[in-house]
Image (cartoon, rainbow, N blue to C red; front, top):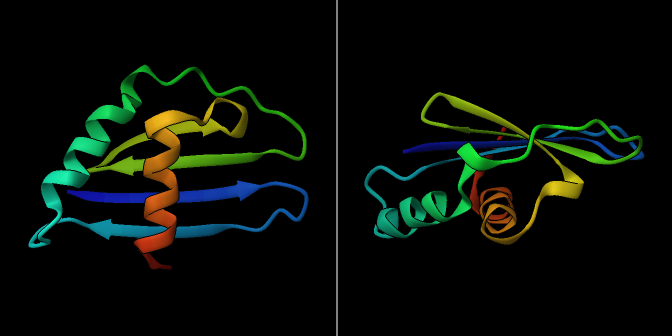
Amino acid sequence: MNITVTRSGGLGGLIRRASVDTGGRGDAAAWQELVRRARLDAAPAYRPAPDRYVYDIEVDGRSYRVGEADLGGPMAELVDRVLAEGGRS
């Protein structure tokens, strides 16, 4: 499973991107479970807001856009973990 998170916006307008390829990882099942719990298909429609972050999340070619105000629970955990552990581009 390939997971990419791009965070953009905010006051500085900086972009941060990180990716994780779970193939061959010992914790691949935990990543898959985290993606399942994040329920990205049920994410609220993106609503632009000034000076807030926007998160573009891609999982195996499927893309989701979530505003900072709507990021919480397992979805926030997924984003935080990818940004912390993923390779940066």
